[in-house]
Image (cartoon, rainbow, N blue to C red; front, side, top):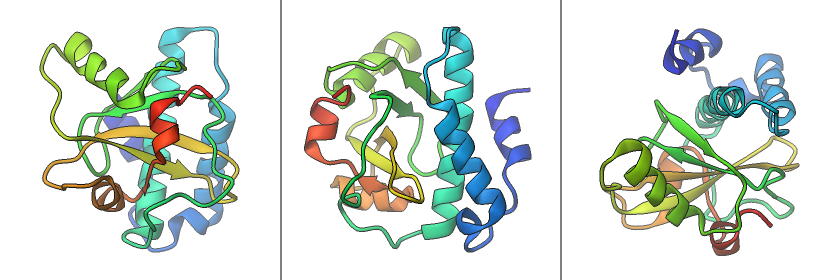
Length: 172
């Protein structure tokens, strides 16, 4: 079973307010618990991809189009990691990168070139998922075409535009 099938089976049908439901809060709590680094790199990638994708589905269903340009005050990236998305919106594939002090967008460009063996789509934008209590979240780099700015691309994906300092130095 691939990650797409696992997410489809785990995620309920899209319903307004799902992220605020008991099931939505359970999924978001699971994302937070799974964000702690694990011993196995492969397991960490799979769990991270499923967790972040689940959070994307919940966040998108609950707040489509109501996000501002910046994440709420107090947002932070507790793991310092970055996820690279295959496509804008609800990514079919996410690749979780190890925490690094390198620019998040540059990390994902390198990922596209080495792992996908193709040139990355341009533009790439940094977006942020925020947990329901503003206590952490995740930084996800998404392909932004046809949008010209991060705010519009991230809003379309149901996320916030990442602050410049979060993109420049995600590991801090």
